[in-house]
Length: 542
Image (cartoon, rainbow, N blue to C red; front, side):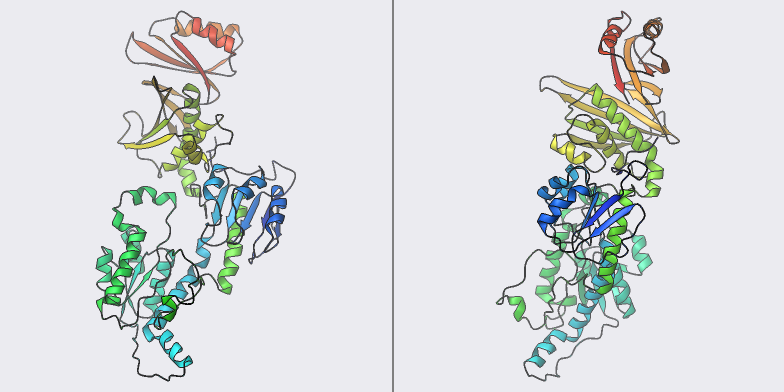
C-alpha cells in the first residue's frame, strides 16, 4: 500500500502528453531541456497572456512580478498542480486559496543565502569605517580625514536569528577574526557548537556584550515550527526581538557604548514599507547606509534561483515534495519511509469514520507509543480520508486542513504514553450532531511493518486489515450470530475475505467485522439488520 502524499500529477505512464511548465517572469532558468517535460519560458509575460495560456500547463513558475491571485488560480483550471516561486517570499501568491484548491506552492529560499549574507557583511564593514559618512562629505567637497573608524578584528558581532543566512554571516565574521554571539531560541545547542558561536540566553544578554548586531529573523511559517513556537513566551517572537533591538540601539549605540560609534546595521528580517520620500529622516542621516532590496541581486544568486526552482517544480510533478514546499508537509524520503504505513493508516481511519459519522465538527487524533518520526503529518492524512467524498474539492495533503477549517472542523491532537497492546497506535475520535444530540465514533489502528491494521472500533478491540468492504455488526455475545449472518451472505454469493471478533465482556455486548469481496445493496444491508441476532450493522469501505 502506498501512503497518501501531496497530489502526484499524472506521469508519463498515465498520460500520453508531456508535463508542461510555464515560466512567466524574468529569470535565469538554466537548462530547459528535460525528458518528459515541456518548459516554456517567456519573461515578463503580460497578465492577459498568462490567463489565456495557463489552463494548458501543469505548473507555473514566477518571481515577484506576477500576482497569483484567485483570478489566476481559477483561470488555470484543473490541470495546474504546482506553483513555483523563485526566491524566498510568496507574498504575490494567495497561499490560502492555492492550498484550498490543492495546489502545491514551492519556493527556493536557499538560492539567495550567500548573496544576502555578503550584503550584511558589506554593511557591517561600511559601518565600522564610517564609509557612508565619508562618501557624503567627500561628494560635498569636504576632505575630512579626522573620523576614526574601528577594526572588526576581536570585536563582537551579535546575530539575531541563526538560520541559513545568519549562519553564513557568522562564518564570514569569524573569517574577519570577530567573536560571534547569537540569539535564536529555535536552534539547538548542537548547531551553535558546530559553528563555534556563543549562545546568548536572551536578547538582552546578547545586546549587552556586542559591538554590532545583524538581524536575520525569517517568517517561520513552516508548519514544522508551529508547535514549538506556540509553546514559547511572546517575548521570544520575531517582532518583539526586532523592536527591542531597535530601542536598545536608539538608547546606546552598539555594545552599550556612546552612540557616536558606528551604528548598528540591520540586514535580513522582514520590513514592510516603501521607498522613502525625499524628506525622510533616513535620507539625511550621514551615518546610515541605505540600499534597495538587493540581497538576492547578484549574478550567481539569480542563476541559482532560476535553476533551483525549475528543479524543484519538476521533482514535485513527479511526486517528490521534500524541498521547498511552502504549504504542504515537507516529507523527505527518510520521513516517507518511516511514516508511509501510518499515513496510509490515517487516511483509512478517516475514511471509515466519514461513513460512520459524516459531518463531524470535532476530530481528535491521539498518538500512543514511540513513532519512528514526528507523526504530525498523520493528522493531515486522517483529514484527507475523512473529507473524501464530502466536498467539491478533492482533499489531499495540501488542502485538507484548509478544507477542514472552511467546514468548521476543530482539530485536536493528543499524545499519550505506551499503548497497552501495541508498540504504537493511532486513535481517531469524531464528534458530531445536530445540536440536540451529540454522537461520537472512535476507530484506532497500528502498523505491522508497512501494513496498516484496524485495532479498535468504538470500545472494542479488533484486528483486521482495513481493505475493501467491511461489515461492522454488533450483537449480544451469544452463539449463532456469525453463523446466521454468514449463511445469509452465502445465499447472496458474497464471499467473506476476513473476520475479526471483539467483546467487552463474556455474555455482554459484542462486535464482529467481516471483510467482504463485494458491496451489499441497501436492501441486503436492511435484511442483515433484521436478523434477530444483530443489534446494528454498518457497511464501510476502507
